[in-house]
Image (cartoon, rainbow, N blue to C red):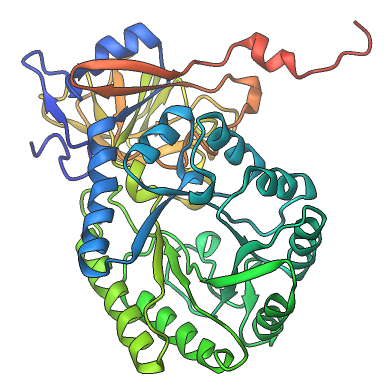
Length: 440
């Protein structure tokens, strides 16, 4: 299993007798031939296992807890149904994500609507669907939700997102708990206090709790303790003013293993630190224990997903580097170009062969920065080989685009030796369908 990078591949991964990578009992080379590449393969068993691990690890330590799937990591109707079947709530950040939830009749009371700039249309759709909570991120939104709830003759439960000015030591573009960020009401400027008081005074809002999110991915445990202690201590002053802290969320940001030598703490470690901090600080401050809400997204789907690509051209620059071009790239996984994210790679059709050389895996998009893996040790790649990139289940498809007018890839889910298409590959007709040609 060493060659399989077993810590970062889906749980149900193995090498077949033919030397091919198999996921969920399905041969990756057969799936590539059937569905084409680029192709994203999600292992259902891995996703269900991760859902259950969050439920068990947090619930066993803090019974009044709930995991909410952060759907921005990856969402489609099949994923929404899986999440609902595992008893998780859902965190959405757009009207589009809400539309997916509505399409599968996801329980509205289990939906939490995040985002720093919700539109009036999105707020109206969420109110009319009866979502459980808005996680309010601005004074503009506070006014808007209050007024639109008044128009409907209803009182809408809300939480406020606060910014505690704590650095989680993650990438600058995914750090969200510091002062200099677009997210949340800052504590140190006084905005947090003003927002709490405004929400408490609003006749059509029910302030049920507070949310923070420090960033992602967070490999360290200390920022959670510091964030929870800081925010709960700050909130104590508002209890005499009427704050009833029924919900508290330290957010998500749980890290995953993208490369074999950078593995995260187990979920149990995150659960230990977070539940202890909430319980101890709540007890010390006389809060009682609020419902604890955690928001795993990446940690549910990243390991479950593997991206498959077909090798095209191979360019060897003697003494410098060998470039291996594949039929996908930054259009279906922009994370390496955007965040300098690291991934491992393997040849899915030649897994059992030993590594022979170090290569750079690059995409087909017209950008020098279209690099998927800067350094991959592989058997000497040839045109037609099948490259597999583990831990590709989070954000690749969600952030995918049509740069160079390339269609986005297909997605399949695998379980018990069966593969099921859950998102078909886009066609050129799909790309042209949204265009309006006045001269036609």
